[in-house]
Amino acid sequence: MRTFSCAPNCALCCRVSPVTVLPHEVYILSQLAEELGVSVQFSPAYTLAERYSGIRIALSYLMHLDSEGKCPFLSGTKCLVHDLYKPLTCRSFPYLPKVIKYELDPVEREVRMEINFVISTLCPVVKSDLTPSDVLRMGNIKIAVNYAPREVKVAEETVEKRMFYARVLSELWKEDQVDLEDGRERPLWPIVNGFSFIRRFRPEITLKDLM
Image (cartoon, one colour):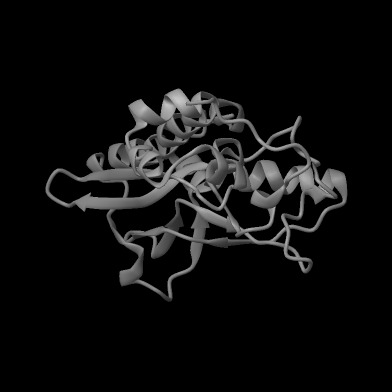
């Protein structure tokens, strides 16, 4: 089996769907967009409700495609932020989460998470390189790392970042500084960025810690 390598000047992955980004990435990408004169739009994805303050905490966002149906940071086939800060999802493509499941344990006061991965067949290189049975086997990260080692490494890094948010919120819950439930239970509560929220309690955490 060959090793995955992007096709030159393809950029198909920059056009297929909105990009999932983590809370701290919203700040990083917003700053870069301002510096580059690019317009970006984010909307919250998964949220947890925090009952003490009556807000929802966004643990992920969608960065939307622009009016031309492409990533706002795409110019021709060039990524404007490739050498500045490319989102984790983009760096791990085509190895992406198929299912991300959060579970709240109100007894232990823990936020738990389960992620299953898949290799995206939207990528023409994947279609060319892998058979349907190969694609199914890529759900096993130990197999996928042989085909897409760089992308799998970033996928694992992304899991670590997601776990960071879950771990800090669990600590705050155990300390009785927050009281959490599924954000879908409180659809009308205002939304706060997850990175901004945890810094209320852990101001020593910086963007550099998560880059």
